[in-house]
Image 1 (cartoon, helix red, strand yellow):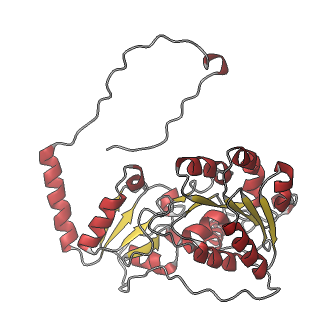
Image 2 (cartoon, rainbow, N blue to C red):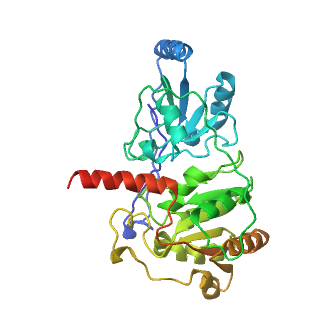
Image 3 (cartoon, rainbow, N blue to C red):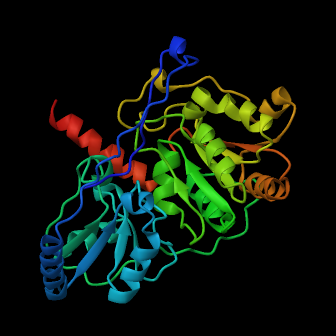
Length: 358
């Protein structure tokens, strides 16, 4: 079995400039499959799939890493088997495809997706890690149940903004969904930036979705957008980041300015660690209120917006879309207890676990 994962090489500072003599590097040994065993395995898998009444593909992140997205799409269209992605593999297939179910994350995902996947009599795991991250904090419940209708993410039409109406996370992501096109790459940080994006945004065929796994890399999104845009300069990053994560690494916008990049940074500002509040609330979850919209004044470039109402969001997105010379940052001021459905499911489940142990 082969994997593609990041490799980290750490060098002590005094070794960085050290002159070393070149030497012959031994060729890397790559294991190959036994052709006979491979043919027999494929024959057996084909028999199982053909005998299944309700097969479902769960497409994992390794399909991204090995460049197998086209092969997956071909397989889905040839077999007509419904396909779900995981949190780590979101955008592995266009989410406008009629056989796409949605993101499967155990108890955290949409109920219709969870019910359909968990009622399958044949799960085809392609490049999927059976880990805590990909199984919704181990809430996956794979057993046979009745569920016939194939769910599909619906892109609902969005109503005009209501003047003076407080912005909510639901309205924010509805509007962002309509904002996406094939020139935008979505970069989501941890917390509700990730949960809401994974469950509520519908990714187009030509764009990507990049995010860390749950809580392993808080502060990921702003720095990640730099590498993503440098690698794919035709794509413009839409960065979704909570205020807590932004306060860790958000000033990498200075690097964004230095390289003349132009991400649109949306700060989900609920003045605290929103993922923690539902599980154990207290003043320790609160953050000092930064004036995020004034960061362009510090850096001498960029555009900043305060978003408190629906019409503020409309204006900020319209101006940001047209402003391509530098970055834009939207300070979206949400209520302290305004959570996405995915985060509500997660925190209620974790709260029940904690209470059961008391």
